[in-house]
Length: 424
Image 1 (cartoon, one colour):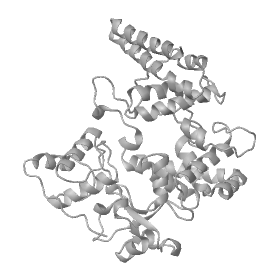
Image 2 (spheres, rainbow, N blue to C red; image 1 turned 90 degrees about the horizontal axis):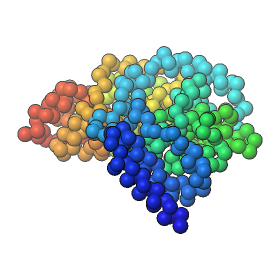
Image 3 (cartoon, rainbow, N blue to C red; image 1 turned 45 degrees about the horizontal axis):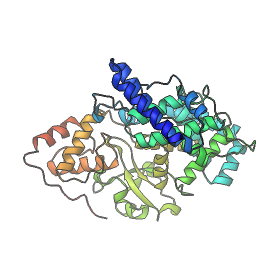
Image 4 (cartoon, one colour; image 1 turned 90 degrees about the vertical axis):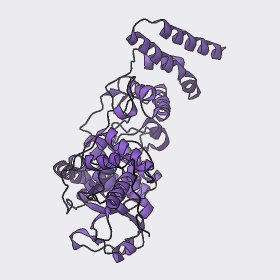
């Protein structure tokens, strides 16, 4: 009986959409039909019809959010997020890092007992959970402003990752059903992340941690719970004890940015034999010499270079951005007593997502193993840009540029032969 009622509501909503005369009304009716399609999943998750209806009352898509593919637009027109639209120098801002590090050191003293317990129970060094807190909300000073249900529904309806956000939306409804939050205080980022360290709703249910022992997992108001929940997420994502995130290094001539990324990983000892040296002439600690590491060049050859470890990838699983993970790693180092990078960031131009996507498409068409055409200059894309630049006599800096794109366009009739990227 309930299935019949649900089906009728969906049909009625679709008919209403077809009968609406204005484009705006048609769009809203279509959105309402989408919302109704969520009801079976919400019901299966234990959400009542009353909670469901109250959660969506008056909700319309927020078309100002990033990462949306709007009607009449393509994925190349998507408004990107800061991690992918700012240059590394802009995102990994030294002055901002210095301010956050000063605050982080003070907070490390203030919350010493909490951080001691986190290290003891969860095995994550204090500076890393503090660094994520700093990066995500400036230690709680940046407040979320979006109603999470609206933000997640918009992303599930119009975003590039619809299925992922659909699942997160169901969990957000469950937060309301279980009384964890109310409609008034269920605030999030544009992507649905919540609390002091920006947890997605599903992670709240899977990994939130009640460190203060009050029987609630309060990632919004309890600093012990929020920091412990972050540590629990890092542990779940594969944190490796006693390893750093990365070391800044200097590369010898025979090791270039073309060798960036996990596919070219080898032991620190092996990299050292190739002439890779740690910045400021510091020695690599003995306990990391046999650990696997890979070259990381966030700005190609136009900035600091690193040997990165698995914990860099763990941080990326918290936020899938190289710049984000470098920011968090350096902030953690600063909180622990470290400082700025030795090398300076060059003033490179951040190419548009459509331009990077075209470079990726053309490289893939020329036989280069581009893993994903997404308009983002990740490790794989940077390394293969460098390989193409080297093979064609262009300046080899492993950074997407108009010069490289123009060369690729001109070469389409006579594709350049891809050269070897080197061997382990």
